[in-house]
Image 1 (tube, rainbow, N blue to C red):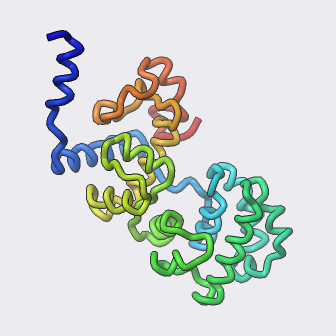
Image 2 (cartoon, rainbow, N blue to C red):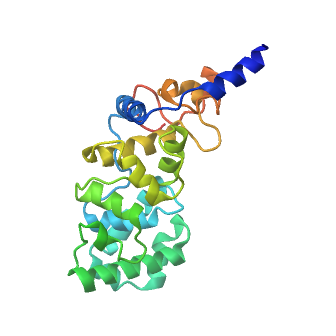
Length: 251
């Protein structure tokens, strides 16, 4: 038998990962990401649930860094939901324009703030079923707000999270809600929010969409997708968006 034939035979006879083995491997990756990113947290600047909700809405198709440049002036001008609800649309659009898609985002922010005032007495609700009734708020946004502003565990399935959990072999699903539930079964509920932050950190800094830095990845040995990106350690290190040994902080 040729080497190539043997390789094919090995692939065909390889045993699928058991559910128990998957849970163990997934939790080991989670722990090791914690060693790499000990300070993983929401990268949007905020002081209360209203500010976080506003910032998350603005973060669609934008970077957290870009949003953080806009929000200080925005929060100063509209410190409460009532203030934002009464905002002049053109003035609001001018403030948030750098984040992109500012027409739609302004509509969402105005609709959200008006609903918070009218339906919840001016206080952002701390329940998923209530949050998703607000204009511009889906499960992803709601879980960010719940986890980081209210301390309610939630899994945030953004593009980074969805990409990495498939590469890690934690799920083959694409639908964000199904992914959320599938991954939730692998981890204790108390870990969901921090899990989201660690995975998203890794997606932004190492496991990039187009060219992951596999040769410099701290969890490559546990990843079934290792090798799809740059494998040379030196070239891979040049792709990193953080300085190893500095707590996963961005360059």
